[in-house]
View 1 (cartoon, rainbow, N blue to C red):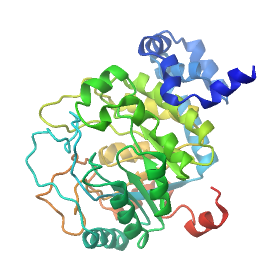
View 2 (view 1 turned 60 degrees about the vertical axis):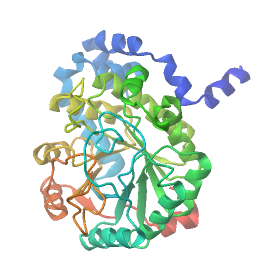
View 3 (view 1 turned 90 degrees about the horizontal axis):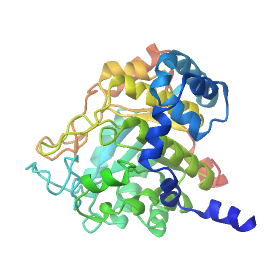
Length: 388
């Protein structure tokens, strides 16, 4: 018995997810009944079977009930606040070949690739700080040889001079490399698995270290062991069946809450819209499906932060803000130098949909009866106590 418990608590998520193969998950979702949905709505501590039911076609008639419960849970754990952040792309160099990405080495897009120098990062930070931002997300392509962890740590130190909260969305790293970022002031790591389906993963990642499915899947646990305060997961919606992705993403979130209990969990919902000409998303997600996914995830992960980016159009973000979202980007640019110099001739990762400035997004949040928050915690307090 003791041995079995030890195996359970030490199993990596890349091993745990093998217990939930695609055919099993699809069957669970397809066979869910209205009674199963009712039981899932009545329970507070929901099981994987409950999550499958909430993601199923049988749950569609109950979306209004799910929305009311999602709103109540969000207010219970997060109050009426929506935190604001902005991405800063410090490099668009990439050695990987991900067929859906504008940064990919073989995307076929002929635009300038750059890595910002410290002075240019300062200019980007100053431009965003002037607009009111207190939380930024630093991003790079998959190019560890050209933009190594130490270079990202240096960029984080520069950003920390302007912002009390600095996160990164970069390639998967070893635990000591995440520790290097944490020492530089990084408090959050975002890493999308892109797709949790192993076969689809192999089909869309054609070269580079990112081809290693398990290496990427277990990276956020390594970041948690290194002391990173916030871990953000996500699937790139449109690569595989959205309901299956939601199921695996929910399990991944639960796993991280259990194993990295000193870190806070956040979930993002990036949806593919604009891709290079060589690729067409095989499983496009409708607005209604995105709503159901967000609601089901809120009921399954009530204490997780939910992020919504400018990938979505303004009108849809306005409606989703009350359905479980706790954090939004605003006034975003997806190319290096996009704030200070505009960098129009520099390659961007993807085209954004919500082009409103931060003031407009703040006004929208207030119209929804919510409170925009530029800074959600005191970094000095965290450093002093070592607690979240």
